[in-house]
Length: 574
Image 1 (cartoon, rainbow, N blue to C red):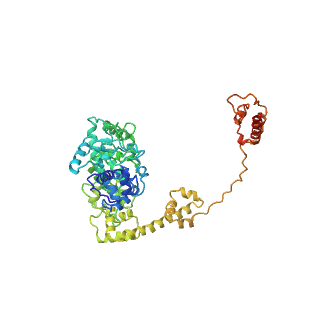
Image 2: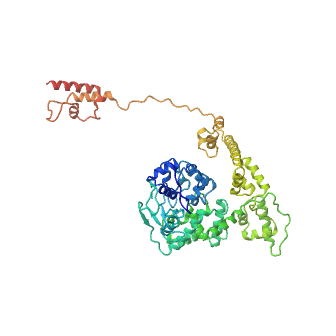
Image 3: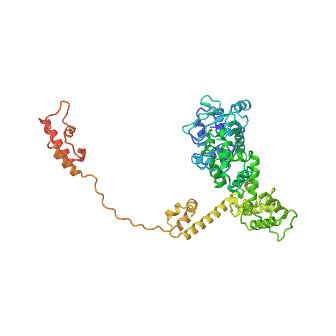
């Protein structure tokens, strides 16, 4: 069946693209278009994260890009991945390309998060009208489906919601915002003081959806960025500790107007606000994007400012280049005190010996990081390496050599100073380089996992196969999935477990004894006084039995059954 596909409009969701395709081709049932484009009757019916994107891209000839590009351009996935490590990115994108997305929301941590796992479809009336004028139909916008967006980032009008799979159950079909088949309801009436806050958060949310962090994700750099913002707000003590009580009081008061609204009630509500302290005390990777947005808005008020501080903090954590050497003597400056000069020399010496980042070392020596950076540069003690703007032939050759050795991409990026996108560009320019790297990386990874496995057995020689399977540090799982033959040859021998000889099972019921008891009771009953409605059947005998310690079952009591049958024959002859 040949399908006509529409163009992908700005900020259009994948669900909208399929709904318009259904109308454009005059297809009655949503399951039919799902089977046509996905070979699956339900893949097209999800309005949040669709599976089988690899099948869709193959059937459409990559007209909308590869599976990763489709997932990033047409879903809200980038919003939830913005403050997550690359491993989570790869896992999430792999699930959307694969045959099932059931684990995806758990990978993103949505079920226990403040927004929950199921978000209703929402739309803006003004955007709906503009879409009809510009494109001839209305569609769902990605930025309206974000849990921290309650007013339209473009028109500042409250969003409307559709009662469509609101609890995640049932099939939704393929609908557009102006369809009469779906029930709609408006958001709660927003009080005046809440609207400016929601407008800021909506704008910030749409920027997080479309714009990447200014540097690769780093939990330590993110923590340092928030600490910088807290310091500017006067919420850090002299020793660098967070004034927790002041922070909680101020952030609770600042967001009081939205503390009862969905999603925000579990972040800035009176019982939850202190949870934001964990972003700067024990940074973890499983914080909901909404929590990060609250911190960014409260401390910086602007995505651009936050991104610039984050970039600066990450540069502070970069190590020295191998060629940088500490000068034996440094020219003293007339405005530089002897104590500060000594502290700067000590800081540069520790940094050169890789004893910490500039930020942490400056705190240890009680030096303001801004002052340290200014004077270290003037005195020529250290230089912060920058990522090259252009890729020289030497760097390019180094990248290709490392890739052919199978080094991980992060290691290549670290050693060459190039971003992951620059390395990808080099891979794409060389026809067979990516294939060569994959094969080499597989060998590299296999060798590392084998070494890890053998080292684990050396450290724990008495470990069992069961303990190996349960351990995360042994490398067993990777080897089982990728190098099973080698693993089977190096597994420790199984221990023989002597089992106690099982005793014969005694029967639970002594049916012979029960049969004798029932027969004795049957022989003393009187069957001469039958009621008019009674028939000479076994049940008539059982009704007249005295109370026994068990319920008589004639099929289990052969003697009793035989006696009853004989009595029935005798009585029938009378």
